[in-house]
Amino acid sequence: MDGSATGSRYDETYARWKADPQAFWGKAAEGIAWSVPPRTVFDPTLGVYGRWFPEGRLNTCHNALDRHVAAGHGGRTALIWDSPVTGRSARYTYAELRDRVARLAGALATRGVGAGDRVIVYMPMVPEAAIAMLACARLGAVHSVVFGGFAAAELAARIADAKPKVIVSATCGLEPGRVVKYKPLLDAAIALSPHRPDACIILQRPESPCELTPGRDTDLLQAEAEAMPHPCVAVAATDPLYILYTSGTTGAPKGIVRDNGGHAVALLNSMSMLYGLAAGDVMWTASDVGWVVGHSYIVYGPLLAGCTTVLYEGKPVGTPDPGAFWRVCAEHGVKVLFTAPTALRAIKKEDPEGRHVARYDLSKLEALFLAGERCDPPTAEWASALFGKPVIDHWWQTETGWSISGNFRGLGLFPAKFGSGGKPAPGYDLRVLDEGGQEVPRGQIGTLAVKLPLPPANLPTLWHADDRFRSAYLETFPGYYNTSDAGMIDGEGYVSVMSRTDDIINVAGHRLSTGAMEEVLAAHPDVAECAVVGVKDSLKGQAPIGLVVLKAGVDRAEADIAKELVALVRDRIGPVAAFKEARVVARLPKTRSGKILRGTIRRIADGETYTVPPTIDDPVILDEITGVLKAAER
Ligand code: COA
Ligand code: AMP
Image (cartoon, rainbow, N blue to C red; front, top):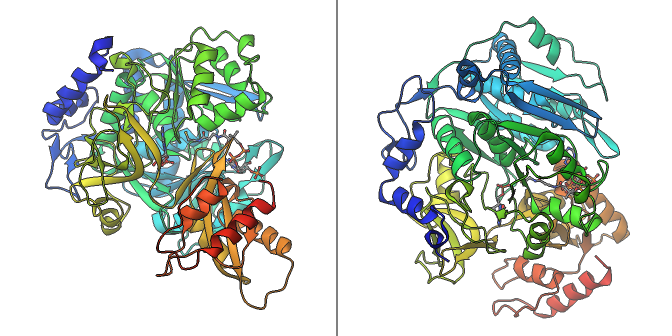
């Protein structure tokens, strides 16, 4: 269906962007307070594929906090912390948040942090996580937030690559039924990393206070109390605001770089165009600040737009019940809720009838946005029937920082098609390409690729790795950014994202690399070779499963080895990998040239029909694999 036929201004807006992208983004840039307004919107000669707003100067924290205070909105609520796992909550006005951020910025500055220096933020879902991010932005420093569910080795890899001057952390995170002690993880990571930070600033949480390391650590509240508020430092629009590491196809994570200017412009624009929100509205993104969704829509997007953001430390179920999301929405007057389909599936599993929904007044909730993985139509239909409000699946990546496709509340919604991630966002010239880089006809599946340049807020490069950026994203299809997602665009322009074309899997909305898990399994002394694939999981979307071939002569109990492998992945990558299953097989199916047929293994594990690849070395192995995968109920 054509958007314009239904009153949506999507078609008109997309056409306006396409006709003159510079005018479109130049106009959007007017919403930002620049200390030096950019004369050029986009310069194709700079950077790897061009840079947005190259001469502009600004401070992102000023745009997120100070300017709202200066405009007389200091008393408006900026951030609501809602933490069912601690039983606590807090509210911060724009003025209060600005004051805490300015002091923490002062504390960082006295520890030598200045513009361009990196700071790692390794924190649970506490207000101080957002305060630390904004404090870095205030100084023009570059934050790199590391998700709390990663193990020490993953944190160490990020410390080694980002080389932070300071690490801001907390003593613990809280998972249902378990206190995750951060301090031992932090200490282990620093010991593992070749780079040492000069200082650590640590939030003592009453749930698990701990001894600080003398000479290195300071209590965060004490550091803030002792510091002078630091003013905002203007930086170039093209200077990095943050690095966010994400899974790549090898064990080494990719440092996605986000700049200041393009990021502020695109995020502010998305708040109105995509989410249909204005200053004073309440947005709740039920994600984690460790993920891109959390960066963009728990912290920066809502604050740039003068909205109220909710920072939630809890789960969709079990904290205390499957009504938790609806309680938060009702209590805080949430207008737009953004979460992952897996969270809805978790709620649906425990409360299929939506009994908990009926307990709360959700009259203020206007729309539900979903991302992180494709939302399966039954879940979208369930949510839609339950609320009678738009349920909008929108597709994005850490690399893009905001949505590549979606449905645009601010432009008037076009009719939803469940199973589709909407239509391309103005800013993205999205194409579907075959292996040779030719466009495929509408309705056919291929690789989703964005014709360069990428819009503002998308990664300009990888941290100190232009070549890796080129080879990972730009070389497969010259002139295009390869999303590594396979999908199609139908005759009406709706995009469907079906699967990854690389080894990335999505487990409970968390992006993980099977290659990284294979590296861990291969390090076990009894393992000769291995393959990890993502199999269908009714709750988490996908779950990893490892098949291992043991070295000749190993005669230990397979169950013991499997247990060790599960523990090893948890220890090296972290609990978030959700790696719970390893099976011993005699051989792995391979092509004659020795490539492991992971796609075929996955299809067998999912019980799908498959054709025996003509290049297979020995087809009998497939029957053996089928037998092993069927042997135990998953
Ligand atoms: N710190 C430490 N450990 C963490 C963690 C964190 N921040 N987040 C998750 N973990 C742990 C969990 O406790 C779990 O550990 P366990 O193996 O001891 O049980 C493990 O990592 C796997 O977590 P997860 O895959 O999230 O499963 P779960 O059973 O704990 O929860 C859901 C399932 C669906 C409720 C939950 O995954 C969820 O809410 N997902 C939404 C994800 C999301 O918002 N993604 C962002 C993209 S928009
Ligand atoms: P991340 O970088 O963690 O945001 O993960 C990005 C990947 O998640 C994408 O490349 C997709 O594979 C998947 N993804 C995110 N949102 C969607 C969506 N709405 N539909 C389909 N896949 C999605």
